[in-house]
Image 1: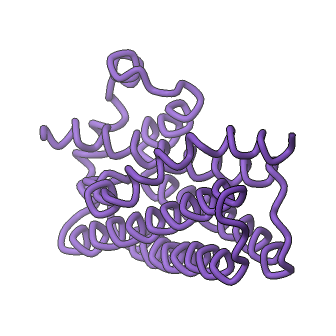
Image 2: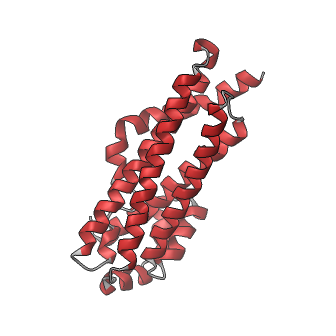
Length: 217
């Protein structure tokens, strides 16, 4: 019964994995993309690079984790290859570590770069309620993004992405320790990690959508 339940629940994750696996590079530029317009040149170009590179690392890690879930799902058919599972979850950890390093560099550069005051003024006066209604965004996550941007706190947004990345890295490291002991992690643990990925992805996406709209694209 336990295996059947696990297979049923994780089956939907495989579909998500397929989408992420083939579109990592395309999706990466959507996470907080265009937010560099909140800063003065010339450092804004460096900020943009860090945003894209950090997002790329995060999404590669997410793809690795979804592949990990798929391999667990297929255990009833193929059996468990712990050597393979260890490699996949290790890849997820390494890519998240890379994302965290990029977010650390991003926050450091943003903290020392002056804001573009015209963009900040536009962020403060932006109609977030109307924008959310038109997009049908998740209200809880959108509200969190709004809290930063409606006060012009783009640096705070970046720091939150860094915090989320560190939290995910901690969770992935815990999963890795279980797999290294050749034990399959509990469903509840896998659900929590998958939810954390999804929430961070939406957080970054909503920020990107707002900046995309501000830039008139």
